[in-house]
Amino acid sequence: MNTDLRTFTDVPARLDRLPWSGFHRLVVVALGITWILDGLEVTLAGSVAAALQTSPRLQLTAEQVGLTGSAYLAGAVLGALFFGHLTDRLGRKKLFNVTLGVYLVATALTALSWDFYSFLLFRFLTGAGIGGEYSAINSAIQELIPARLRGRIDLAINGSFWLGAAGGALLSVMLLDPELVGPDLGWRLAFGSGAVLGLVILYLRRFLPESPRWLMIHGQPGEAARVVGEIEARVAAGGHVLPATSGSNLALGPAHRVTMVSVARTLLRQYPGRTTLGLVLMAAQAFVYNAIFFTYALVLSRFYGVQADAVGLYILPFAIGNFLGPLMLGPLFDTLGRKSMIFITYAVSGLLLAVTGLLFDMGLLDATTQTAMWSIVFFFASAAASAAYLTVGECFPLEIRALTIALFYAFGTLLGGVGGPWLFGVLIASESPREIVMGYLLGAALMIIAALVTLKLGVKAECRPLEEVAPPLSGG
Image 1 (spheres, one colour):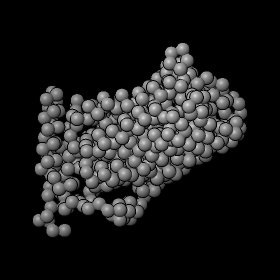
Image 2: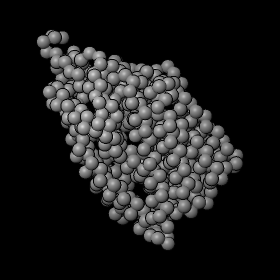
Image 3: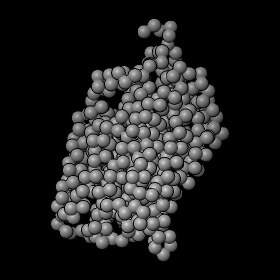
C-alpha cells in the first residue's frame, strides 16, 4: 500500500487509557437499557402467557403463545440484520433513536392488540426494534469502554437483561392481580410500560457522542480526535487525572468499502475459527434461553398449578440469579481470561441443566425447588450467554462490527431460538414430562458442545485493544 495515503491516529489509545468516569456510567445507562427493555419484553410475554389464553379478545392456545415468542425472535433477527448494516454505514449514534423509536411504537401497539394476528404482528415489530438495538448498541459500548474493563462491563450490561426481567415479573404480579387491575387490562398495561421507559432513555441518548472509532475508520480522523477531546474534557471535569497514552499510533489506509463479499471473505477466509466459535456459542445459548424462558410460565401453570397472577413471583428469583451471574463472574473474564471462563460457564450450566431435567422427569421437584434449580443453572448460563455477545463483538474488524454482531445474532437465533419456543409449546401441550425433559437434555448437550469448541477455538481477547484483537480492514 502507498504509505503516502496512510493516516495515523491515537484515538484508540486515548479511549482505552481513560479512567472510569461519569461519562462511562452514562454510556452504560443510556445504551445498556436495551437489555433491560428486552428483559422486560420477554418476561412480560412469559408472565402473561396464561392471561393471554384467558383474555376475552385473544384466547390464545399454548401453541399460539409459542408462535408469538418465535415471531418476536424472528423480528429481532431481521431487525438486527437490517439495522446492523445501516449502523456500520451511517454510524452508531444515528441508529440509536431509530431503533428505539421502532421499539416504542411497536410495544405500544402490542398493548392495543385485538386478536391473535395483530398481537403476532406487533410482537414481530417489537422484536425488530430490539434486534436493531443489539447491533448498534453492542458495537458502540465496546468501542467506548476501556479495554481493561471491557469484559466485565460488557457482561454486566448484557446481564442487565435480567433487571428488566425482574421488573417485568414484579409488574406482571401487580397488573394481573384481579383485585387491582385484572388480567385482561393488566397484560395491555404491562406491554405499554415498555414504551414509557423507552421515552426516558430517548432523552438520555441526546448526551452521547458518535463512536470515535467509527469516525476514524470512515475517513474522519479529525472529527474522531475532536470527539475524544470532548470526552476527555468531560472526564477531567469529573475530577479525574488523565494518564498518558501508551503504545504506538494506529495506521489507517483508505476507508474500506464494506460489501457482502468482503464480509463473507473476512468471516470465512480470514477468521474461519472465530466464525465457527461465534455461531456455536450464539446458537447454544439462544436455544436454551428462548426455549426454556419463553415457556417457563406454562410449565409452572400446567405442571405445578401456579396461578397466572403469581407466575412473576417465581420468575423473580430466576431473574436475580441470571443478573448476579454476569455481575459476579464478569471480572474473571478480564483476569482469568475469556477462553477459560467461557469454557467453565458453558460446561457447568450444561451439566446442571441436564441434572435439573432428570429431577423434573423423576417428579422430585415442585414449583419452588424447580425455580431454585433454574436460578443456579442460569447463574452460570447467563454469564455464558453474555460472553457469546462479547466474543462476536470484539473478535472482528471495526468496519463490520455491527453487521457481524447482527449476523451472528441472526444465525444463532435462527438455529437455536426461533424454533425453540414453538417446540417447547408443543411439548408442554402434550402434558408429558418425559417429552419436555428431552428438550432440556438437547439444550444441555448444546451447551457442553459449545464449551468443548471453546477449548479449541477460543480467543484470548482480555485487556487487549479492539484493534489488536482484530486489525481494521482499512489498516495501513
